[in-house]
Image (cartoon, rainbow, N blue to C red; front, side, top):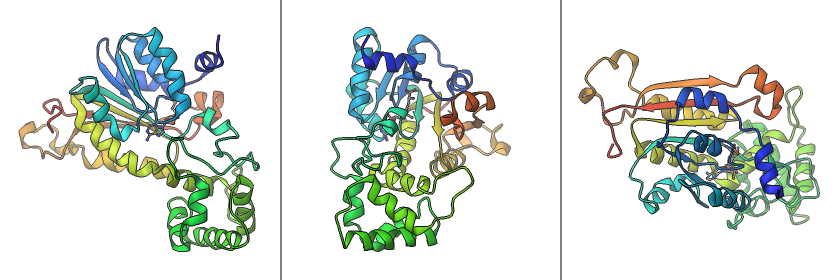
Length: 316
Ligand SMILES: C[S@@+](CC[C@H](N)C(=O)[O-])C[C@H]1O[C@@H](n2cnc3c(N)ncnc32)[C@H](O)[C@@H]1O
């Protein structure tokens, strides 16, 4: 058995039970897994007899998907961003889909790999943080080239304004003496900034998250993916998003809420509902205490689902 096969078999997908229970994927339905990773959710969909189009822009995920491609019919993989899912569907002749899953963020494998620079536990690692290794924009490129104002903006997506300013000033000071290259260089700036940290968390958690979000343009891709995905959904189709921090969850929540028919109008004829209203129902499900004990990485996970209005097809 290869290392990839072993890792795929031992991987624990987050909130799988809830995803299956609420979305209820059926045999022969077409599903998009926009964040293939280790294929945990994709395999569960295949087990249920669904056709799966999987996407991931990471090279390692692509290698793992190759293993599934050999064994499974009705499984397609593209090394693409999920914000390009319509193009991937077009390439395999799918006009619409029954369901979409986005399990956001990085995988444990990406986080643990010291070469990738995602984790503050590897000070000697290069400051990389790209999920897509074909992109030229690494974390080091951003930290060495953005203006102080741009750095403040980058951090303020996650940190407060005082923290963001301290980090930006520290980085501008450090890069006037040397090139910023390693995780340890960024940690040095974080340490000197004396940031407030919540009990039990590391001072580097928020600055690392902000930098990763910027390197991968995560929020922009999420906004595009939600809209593009929802347009691809058949009437009655479901879009399910698992998020791990409040910045991305806020985007998902606002998107679902602003496109959901208000409760007081749900009984009315669908023709009266605005074209901008995609969903007849939305739900938020929190990770169970049992799962967060078993898999502490899942403790902040939230699953949000939107069900598309029945009479609306792809042309919405
Ligand atoms: C949390 S993991 C997904 C785990 C997967 N559901 C499983 O059970 O194995 C997130 C994966 O999504 C990928 N990813 C994150 N954002 C992406 C995006 N915008 N487009 C494509 N892939 C993305 C990452 O490279 C990573 O492999």
